[in-house]
Image 1: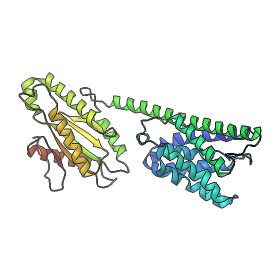
Image 2: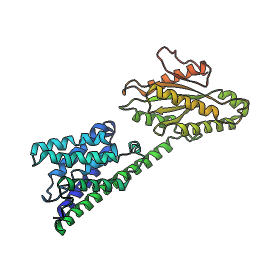
Image 3: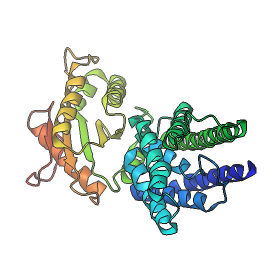
Image 4: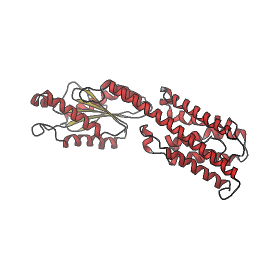
Length: 363
């Protein structure tokens, strides 16, 4: 009886390993909201096809992929992941079809989604093992209640079998979480190495080449905003205090910008005294507060020589209108908006509008 569920668990782990490798493909990254539910649903169906003891309360491990979808993405992915398995179950017409769909598919999807954390969306936070065990325990109790056996006291072998299944499902989910966390750790290390290879030597921010690579991948399939930032009166500052202080001003400004931008955004040194920010915000009202916060933060900071030359920044903002907008077009538009900020008195932000003239020279 026990070697069959172990075989199911091994199959589940193998399927999850394949899914982790597939998710690193460019095609999957681009269509992740669609591909994640499809792959999750297929994995659940494959687990249904495997043999399993008919007298097991937990049936099989078909719910395990749904748990991972709920933990990783929340209900927006977990609930759509139940569609393919539900269609398959409808086709084979098992006894108590609606009950099986509810407790084998919908219940795991809903309960696991309740343990989803917003920080998981960034890919930088590890999924907690305790969440996986908690979900498995809740599902086991719910199944016992649904079947009217929670207060039923059968023989030793009944509870031994179901405790074994609870343990097996918990271990399987733990392994899946570990595989996901480890894959994420490797991804983060690789990304860190990529960033270091594309880093500006003075400010230690990503350079323009690194920024273009990151921004090009990020903007596929979503709306973004580009913020071009220029240090006001930098040439005068450099001429007055010397290049060493000028370099320190660039370093300080870069680190301040890095510390105040949103955790999902990216800042890089564009060149000279200019910086560029990729923002995941596309709402103009949010960007107004965002850009104003950047300007006020730099203005409030006490740089060397502020008594003589007050350090401020000017910002130009361009927002993509469709996910298919070209990155270079957004950068050019933000550059024109920045030029307008410089002409309008500096220490301010401006949104791009089509009537703005081509930028001809630095302010």
